[in-house]
Image (cartoon, rainbow, N blue to C red):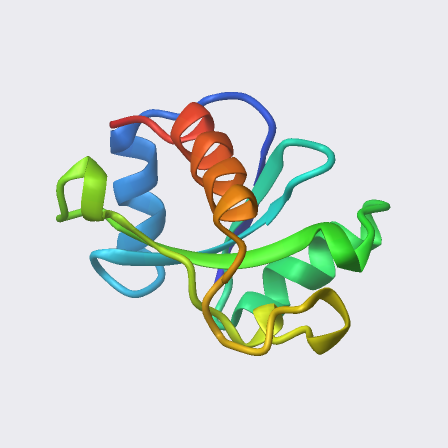
Amino acid sequence: MEILIIKNPITKTELERLAKNNYGNMIKGVVDVEKDIIALGGELHADSEAVLLQQGSVQENLWGFNIYTDQPKNKKIEYTSFINIRPSQNNNSLEVQDKILKNKIKNIINRLVGD
């Protein structure tokens, strides 16, 4: 499955194309909250995570999410992934628990992914 590093905004059409090549109406992604970039695609979040790590990202800054292309903007992002389980960062769940961090993730995704 294709993995793209997104540094500049993409269109909804491009996002839908990526999703169709992955899970249909859903695409897995990983955001680097320090570099303000995302990786989209892959079978697992760990696939996108590995690509970002190879490009110099730091593990503690990477958080997994899913985007559903058939949902309204306020429901299209799901903040769950196995890579988010990080007791050392006070995140003991698949879902990102910290509201400030979750908001930062949402803002990066919304800036880079078209409506």
